Amino acid sequence: MFSVDVSTLKSYLVKIATIGAASYFGILALVFFQQEKLIFFPSPLPEDFKFPFNISFEEIYIKSGDDRVHSLLLKAEQSRGVIVYFHGNAGSLEGWGEVGQTLSQQTGFDVWMIDYPGYGKSSGKISSQEQLLRIAEATLAQAKERYPTGNIILFGRSLGSGIAVYLGSDPRVKALILETPYLSLIAMAKHRFPLIPAFLMKYPMQSSEWIPKVSAPILILHGNEDEVIPFTQGKELSAISKKAVFVEINRGHHNDLEEFPKFSDSIKGFLNQHTGSKDVR
Image (cartoon, rainbow, N blue to C red; front, side, top):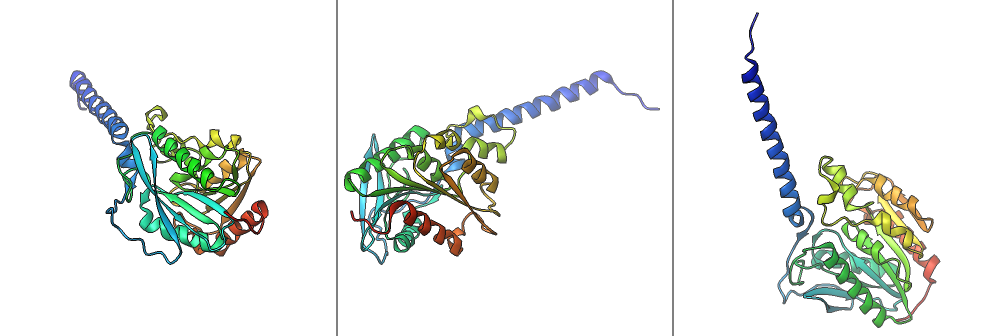
């Protein structure tokens, strides 16, 4: 037989519980105060960086509040309109511009892409969801001025999908394309960190609440082997809107959908169906 000192055991259990609680709340504090570092991974570029594209393009700075964000307008030879593109959470237009160039060449649309604050040549830093949405609104406003009668398409990739959905209710938007989208960043946080309370999310990006307000046709593309944003989230998002068409890319991951012919064929077919075969700026 062995004996147990109940008071000593209680003391140990209290210490363990205290350490566990302190660790948990420490993690919560880290998630809240360091959220930007957990979500955004910018790659800055020098102001004099030269983009090596082989199509005509223009660099445009967009002012929104205290922010001055850099953007690229990649121009098609005979433009059918403009695709306003919001990219993912990492990199800069150095890399994303190549994506835009390919998209322009494949579709015949101009492609207008922005770098978020702190990315590429954009000044400042990201500090709130409201800030990102106001910048997106300013970008769309400029696109509407530049293309007063032309087709305006919104394209959101990964992080940028929520921003594109938010803007999608604008009556000038002809169509919305989403690549590897999420239901919300709250849903993403629950997927990755189940014990993190939703109220700590400073960037909820509630695509699932915004998408019913979109009256334009929607194309959603998602790889069924996406290792970053669950394939099920894209599929569930499409089910919320009667305007949405869902395209499953078999064996597609998060960063390789452009390698599948079904991806580009689906985008071209969708644009031809909803914008016609020809347009001018």
